[in-house]
Picture (tube, one colour):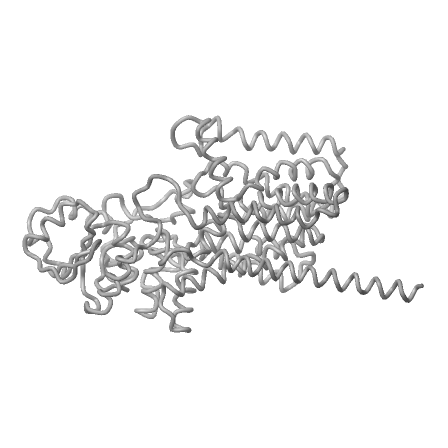
Amino acid sequence: MQENSSSNSDVQYNTSIKTKFLLMGLLVILNIVMRIPSIPHEKGYDSFSIHSLANSVSIFGKAQWWINWQSVFGLYPYSYASAVPFTLSGITQTTGIEMEKTILLYCVTTGLLSVFIAYIFAGRIYKEFTFKYLMTLFFSLASGVMLFTTWEVSARGLFIVLFPLYMYTLMKDNIHLKKLLLLPLLFIFIFATHHYAYFLIPPTVMYVVFGKIKTMKLPRFKETHIKYIIIGTILVLFLVPFFNRSLISSGSRYEWIIDAIKTNVRYIGPEVFFLFGGLAYLINKKKDFEEYFILSVSLIYIPMFYSHNYGPFLLLLPMVILASIGINNLSNLWISKNKKYLTIYILIIILIFVSFSTYYNHYRTGGTQSHWYMSADTSSAGIWARNNLPENCRGLDSGTMESARFFAVSEGHPIIPTIEPNNLAYGLVDITNITMVRNSPYSTGYYFEGPYVVKEGSTYSGKIEWLRLAATKYNQLKNFEYYIEDKYSNKRISEIVHTGASKIFDSERFAIWEI
């Protein structure tokens, strides 16, 4: 009997391992399938600025927007965080794949990376496979992650994916040489990715403090006292920004909260409503070190709920953790009474979540006039310019988002004004002519924009925009060789160009004029 029992146990164990591999394999395939683009070209807005910066590294062999060491992190005028542009340029130069397809490859790879990072991090919280699987599913396929890992490159996207890796490294049990070396290196890399890296400092300090407290003999609080302290902290952190409007820029406070809820649900998914169950569970149970830490990290980011632009991406990981705990507890309770419906239950959860993420990832809602991905006409115009216009020629454009996309595809044929880091990288700006002012160390701008910023009203982009709007004579364009006209723009500059320039390319959206 013992031998049979042992044999049967081995079979069950092997089957369990096979099931886990099967489920994780299917999740990896699902991540790839959901990132197969349903559009013909790259999407986004900031994506094309990074696209152009990456092109400049490939063209010139260096980052020409680097003025000093702070430029590496985007903390100096006319600079940008460098990790993503360098990564894209490296892939393109190594593989020979054009940048637009490189961005697609990069996004799919980053999406797959989110699967494995989320899984190993979830294991630092709970060893149970169901929890790890749910958290991996909800994190890797959350709309906020999918947004920047489906043919749209963004510095925020890489930060979101690397955030749980940093937390995993931070929470490793033993402090040894590898951890002491890896943690600062990872922090520096993330800092070169996005200024969100500042938000890694509070959990790092908190982890060190908690570690010290763990080794000290302190008087024990009753669990009820700790519970009330946590609930009070939640209320204070949520209500202070509401009353002092520190993160509410305009309008009614109540409308702002409603919009914040919509935004968070939009980027995290329908499972966000289960986070209250996960939060209640952590508050009420007897907690170990990891649970105290995760709960504390979730609390310190509560004020960011009011930031519509950046809050959802920073809150994504803590909210997914809490939601996964809530759903996992509900699943265990339900499955214990309805084991025969386990498969149906899992399929319903995956179907609802995947349908939600797929809809928001492959469709767009709202009344904006901007196309959410680059049109085929823009792409063909950019390719024509890349193949027919000379290198290093100077151009002027209509100043629209679509002309910035044109610039990315044309690879600087001609070089036209876009964002300031590109203007410096492509030689439109002379470093010696940059007028800077110093930020106060007591301002948030000092840390997120850098110790120095360009003096207001002196930017190159500002001067060019003034020319587009106020030019009256054709000879005012003598410094430019070509004009890239977006026919959807109604700026005065197009009328001036038509009086003396020669049209050399024409399509439905774009016309290229030789000045």
